[in-house]
Length: 311
Image (cartoon, rainbow, N blue to C red; front, side, top):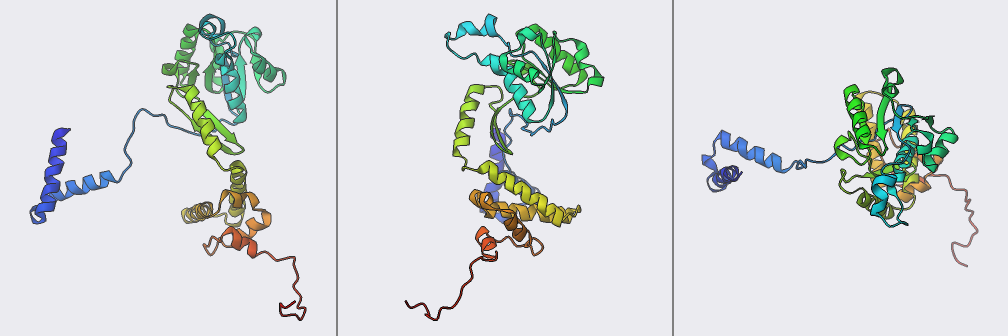
């Protein structure tokens, strides 16, 4: 590394002191270093954060919430400390239901915690009242991903290996090396979802950071995003072109609207405002919220009373 730095320094010194002696190869090296400095630095060790579209897909959850409850975890905490492991299956099932997934839980009924049992009884999820069997992952069941939340590390590892064999993504609770993906701490406000991940290093800290981010957001942020979604759908009806130029123009115009209008502007925007704003699309203009409102017909009628403003 030191040799590389010395070499780069010598080239730059030559450029600064005697540019006439710089050859084509040196010039290309200088250009390379100049371009490299303008690009983002690679930071390895992270996860690829995605918004996985799991709507209508089959997800298998093995276990009903009893991860390390009596035998491994409880004696480490005071009696009144809430056992977070009890919430593993329940929390992840809720995340899956919020994403409109079709959830099946495989677990003996006595292993379900109260929240998971409620979702079974209310028909929100399907329940198989027994331990996991390989037939639960038969190809015809079309399982998109597997989550485990059981108090049996060896059984969890066997399930993970079986998932790897079948190429089904899996998350083994509290065993980062046996996870194809992690769950983060999520802030939810309508269509807005913000996930904080510590890549398995500190889940509790992620929850604290997520709360801080949520408190920093302007009130009504989720509502304003929903209004932006309505505006985009209206725009597609007015300008439904599918060519590259049409798509580029729509994206550019919407980006400018989002940059120019505030959260409060979007919250106050009604259907008439949307229609008036979209009327400016063909001309490539983005009026301000105030300009859109000023363009609306007024319900006030002014009549001359002969006073010329004098009382």
